[in-house]
Length: 209
Image 1 (cartoon, rainbow, N blue to C red):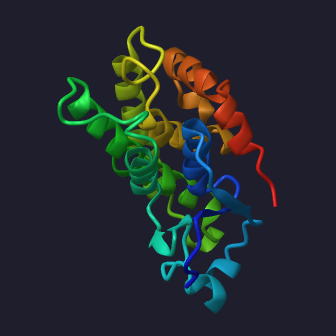
Image 2: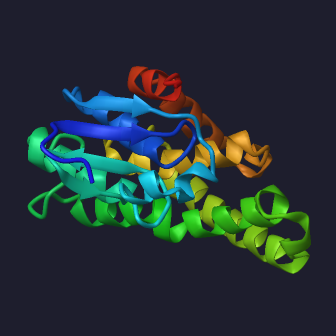
């Protein structure tokens, strides 16, 4: 395990580490971002498993303290190093909505998108199950409808841009790059366009090995 380092993200383009890179730029933090090419086989090699025993992304270090969950990492960074910027606390009216959207991006919507991608092209063809793909697609559409209705006339999920937009925005990015953006409604599409127009998103999504 790497130790005695400052803030460091091991980043793989297009993976969940993109959430962390995006947050680092939004929060204007002084952090090292080591960008590596994504290779699923290399994530299972001993050197990488020493960093993340699950063989997943991301891996983040705060002076040797390791974190591996992207949504947890961005909340940690905001509250420990940015005075709670882009976050919400229990004294604020939006706190409940903030927590819900933070979790929705991964626990609420992310799982269905994972299944959709897996059973459409990520899994070996012999392991893909049509009924699972159909189920995941339907559940994902339900999530998008909920998001469409929730946005109403707002630019972001809350009154202003927050980490919740990073959580949810990454899942929308996965839908776009997997050619499933056609399922997005008008409001969701416009919302994602606003996210992609942010300077921090542009910087994070441009990172290459």
